[in-house]
Length: 215
Length: 272
Image (tube, rainbow over all chains, first blue to last red; front, side, top):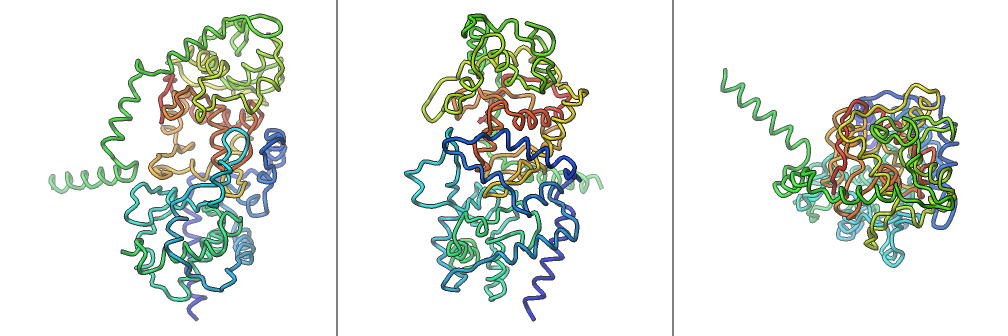
């Protein structure tokens, strides 16, 4: 009973924000093949290059040509597809270790490639960060927070830790576009930036009553 | 009545301030210092760039003084202000830097692939390298348009196409982070951490940016040009290295320059 309510609430919020997020209306469908050809020519193969990153999946393609404003039908397709992609940690526990989550939220390390300034391999062993502060205010202790995303200060305090909220939070981090099609937020779990267990750790950082987020 | 109007204004103003960047005194003082143009170390690089530009070089042992940036062979004054534009001899739209490369190839006899070698194209600030000759020359040529209004080519079919494709690419989402340029640069008042972000669709924002490149980047200790800016953004988006002077890089610059049309060049800029 609780779950469909949350979903429909999120859906309403999604449609509202999708309508107001951008001041421009664009459609690049007509020139998209030319854009693809230009990209293919302008990123030559070679040492340190990973050209697979320029290959778009269906969701990226749709969001690109619609300048992040898909039609209602496309939006529903994106949300269904992205929802189906969500995977969970083997333990099944979506509230991980908030202290590990705190480190992931801070770290912006990882995945810069090429031959000019790749992320140093020696430091790669720590794995990728979530770089959450680039866009979100989260812990009140961290003042150097961006504002592309909404503030998450007190996230757990205002929402509680019901099973529904835990699952929503996990799912949102794993794949934001399951809730908001063409969201600016990277699909952290889906794209393999961080692992399912790490998504659970960040979920705990946001929700745990002991976490600095909720002090 | 008057009092309430005043307090309303105060509230509105403070709202504006917090809505923009964090008003941190140290940062503001730093920014004010950056605005002192006579103290811009980029002026030294520009002077060096002039020497390189006029020096004989390459297999043909000639200078670049006959390079045509669109206003005729050797005309530098105002040339940067009307770039990017279409060039008949290369049959493509070129920005300042891709045009310089074309001249180095066609006039001086250099091999394009050697000039744009990814490992040497930019001064590497991690290794504390000084500006490359090409970076310095680009800044020198741009400086000859200081104080002029930006008016890129936008009438030729290929110019229109470059601008349109550049805008399309600006919204193209790709890579492990799902980013496009628009992820960060299509809304007002946004920041990554404390770094304010330019909205390419806000003429004030985009003019303030495009009129101050080439720019001296304090954290790099060198002058950077638009091609480096395009590479840097793509790198931060976790994409492969975009090729120097490629169609995609030129198209992005063509789009951004068109958005900034009418802005007055104030070169060299100085940025973080």
